Image 1 (cartoon, rainbow, N blue to C red):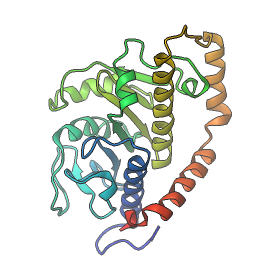
Image 2: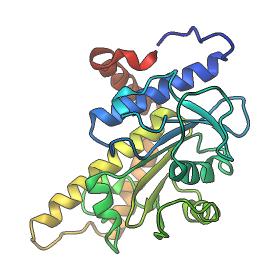
Image 3: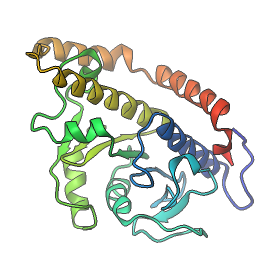
Image 4: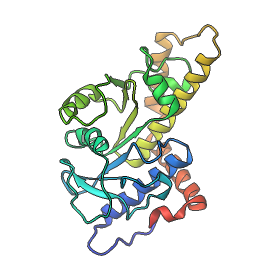
Length: 252
């Protein structure tokens, strides 16, 4: 990534913009997108109440660092931009950005597998090793309609609590993180867990769920040894190398 920001922009904001644009391009590559809808957002370092969001109308494979829109928690643009912002995206993301200082990065998707699992009463089931990394780490929020009501923001935050994953029932998935790497890693494997669950249920055979004590043990293993930040950063570096091959213009 270039470390030279545009005139008048801090180096910290430019780095955040490039990493956020990378998240959009990676989500497009892995088919996590919903055309021009849903969002990935990041808090602007050193600017209380400001965050970056995708320009409404651009496909995720078109998004670049400079095209991202900077807004405040009330939805007002705080820097010049030719683009508007999707109100529904503002509602969900601003709910968390305005209250949760740990969730500097937020990703929300409407993937086929994610929406399918969000529509099940049981949500994500403890069926396999990948799903078990989320054992005890998922919160659920009941569907209230298209997220245009600002009054829902407090309820979204209350539902999320201290969990890194929020399943928006009948709607989709949401993951958070202190860094782009941790947020994207969480969504990547949450999506994979949902895909595996949909495939498993489609076979119509009796389910073999993991016993509760084993599920607890595996979740502890993930937290203590398998999910270390160094591993996540290695994974993120691999993602960025991929982008350098297929879409290096995300940095522009």
